[in-house]
Every structure is written in structure tokens, then in C-alpha cells.
Amino acid sequence: MKFSESLKKNRDFQYVYRNGKSYANKYFIMYVLENNQDRNYIGISVSKKVGNSVVRHHLCRIVREIYRLHENVFNSGLNIVVIARPNAKDVSYKEAESAFLHLSKLHGIMKSVKED
Image 1: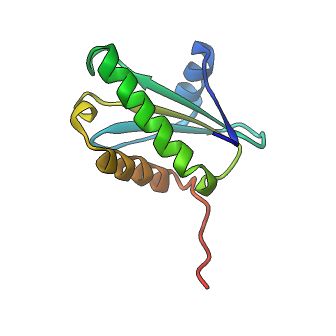
Image 2 (image 1 turned 180 degrees about the horizontal axis):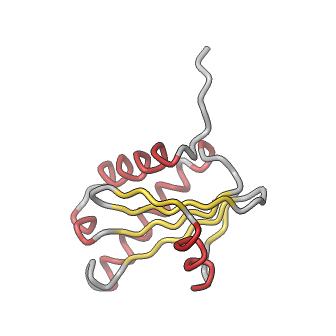
Image 3 (image 1 turned 180 degrees about the vertical axis):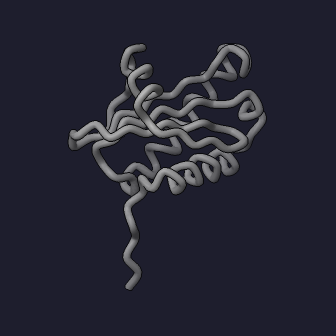
């Protein structure tokens, strides 16, 4: 993640939950809040309700990889918190990627692509 850092502190997550805007789909909930900086901060939360530590860490790595591969299409200056829902544990990578990008489009945080 070249242009981004992780949200680590509980107070940072709570601030995004309180002040950010959220959208949800079948697999994820995404909160987004502008941070007036030149980089993005991403936080990933996976509850114990989703599964054991192996399952939770696997989902966390999937979400982080999806973000890393598409990092260049996101606007900068955002705090993004992604929460995995319990039915996300059985999802394939392609479905998770589709769900993540769908939420990003709903938030309007992807750069507009100019077609030639």
C-alpha cells in the first residue's frame, strides 16, 4: 500500500464510525470520511462472529489485497473502514472484489476514468 496507511487506534475507528458515511451490501459495510491529508487510511474490522482467527485473518488479507491492487483508482485524503459481515467468510476472491468495488462506487471515492 504505497499511498495508504492502516488505521490502528480504536479512537480512529470510532471517529470514522461517528462522523463518516456508510453503505453496506451482502458482504461488507464501508464507512468513509475525508481526512484533509494527501493519503488514505484504511481500517479493516472482522468480528469474532465471522469465524475463528484463521478465517478472520484470511478475510482481512483479502480486503487488504483488493485495496492494494486498486489503490491507484481511489481518491486521496480518505479514512476508509471496512467491516466484514458474517456471510463474507464463504465468499470467493472475485465476489469479495466485486462487493468492495461496488461499495466504493456507491461512496463515489473512485477517480473518474477518462475514455479516449
